[in-house]
Length: 409
Image (cartoon, rainbow, N blue to C red; front, side, top):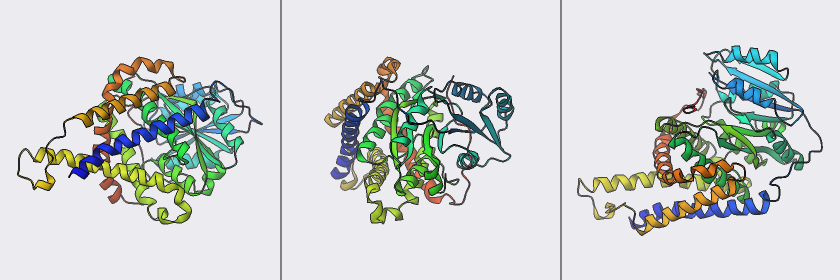
């Protein structure tokens, strides 16, 4: 049992230092030299911006209108209305009369985000596809920064951008401002140093169309098509890059229910990928993906062991357990102090690195002390629930979707 407790403690501690070290290297040796500079593009090929929509009447007009301010001079917009039951389609028709670079695809039954993106890809005229969510406001120079990566190397198959939280009026909204910098942004930076990226950000990512066609496009039976397509591309030896300057402003859930629902979907999608590509991990040609696969698999095991440790501690107060299963105390001692200090350092590192793009995030620092506890508890619970859901899900079942919780605006 001591070994179990040691693993539960040392795993998050070790990974925190791995992420911080990788993020520091990326930020100060790769990112710093480009910060504040504009990309020098050799040419401006047509870019197709794809927007899958499902019941987006509250936000789609702002999203498409804001795209018109892009500094990139050559782009089209393809909005896919995935059987919306509200006024999304009517709003799109109104916008099409106003903006000549907007095209619309309408699906009469809910086919899911993956299917919608594939339809848009087939209809697109550009060789570079920028995919954003229907509530996202893409920063005016974001497309330029992403296109630069495709011109810099023919091996680049995708570029993931830097999502930023728009709604910051509640505690949960403010906490997620820190999460997107100290966890999501930090991990992507570190993974780029290690060579492979777990996933592009589904809310803002660009793809080389040829790369997508090579791997068969997006899967329509995966709960998180963004994670799946990231693995497909990298297993086909395409490179994925992280561009911190490509900002995209998004809404996030601001209730525990909304966050749990979102994280459960993320966790199920990650577990589906874990199961789907298990046999491919045995192949020697995919050895560069082994660290990424093992790290995620280990994180799933850690979640089960953490929950198991808590359950054993609770049971110890009601029944007589064998000595080998007794957990006498899970309350923070010196180990808790170390973890708390490490989390604080990690939060500070994330804020230092990412505040250059969003200086206002410094205002939410006092709220971030609540982040580690909330994050780990929700992550553990949703991961434990998600694994059996991923195992027993019908592999041929279409992954239809609903417009997500976008907080209290």
